[in-house]
Image 1: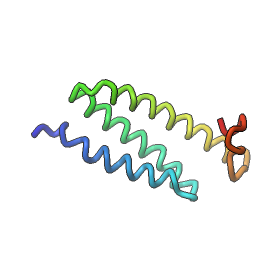
Image 2: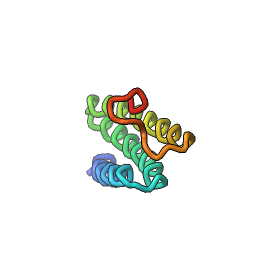
Image 3: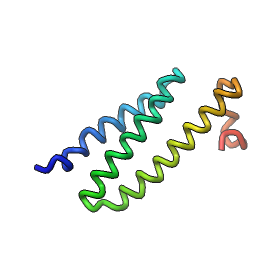
Length: 94
């Protein structure tokens, strides 16, 4: 079996770990979670290109963009000294 075929397993495990980290109440863990998500995006792109799973590759780029957006939003909240983003549906939460 090709080593790239095996990337799907660490990619899956890293994605699950990132999801757990993002759900933390501790800001440092959430920050690490964004970076771990980006690592999983890279692994999924490598695997997706190897297996010609182009929809998965496009999805990973979209998810990476959303991760970067989340990192930016989290940093804004941290700089403003707020403990929460605005209420759901408000301009701040979007």
